Amino acid sequence: MAFDDHAGANKLARTLSERMKVESAEPLVLDFGSINHDYSLITNTFPVNINQGYYSKCLHLSGMKLGVSEETQSAQET
Image 1 (cartoon, rainbow, N blue to C red):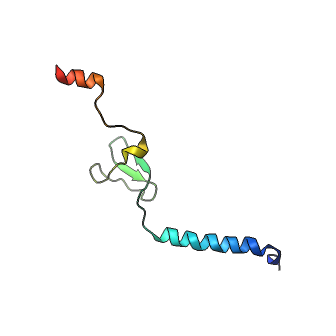
Image 2: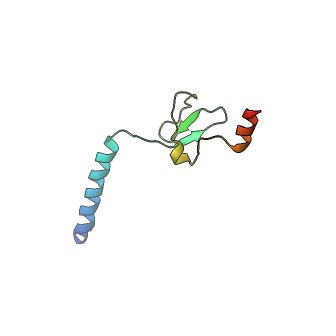
Image 3: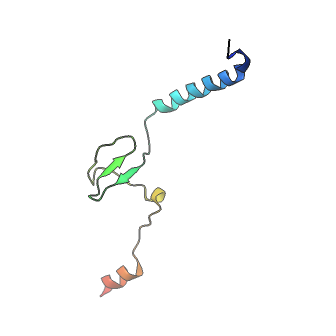
């Protein structure tokens, strides 16, 4: 048999396969995607447009910061 000499590799492959089955059985908590020009969202696992207002963004992961720039703040004061 071709794989008799590789019992360790076979055991590793079976272990990894079983662990991947367990992980994939759990629902996603977070998914990545792209926001289109009309602000609809297409995620990696659900390739259908999701209209603005029907999804949430994690600004921490996107590198975006909430706040008011000095230009905006001075424009609001006048």
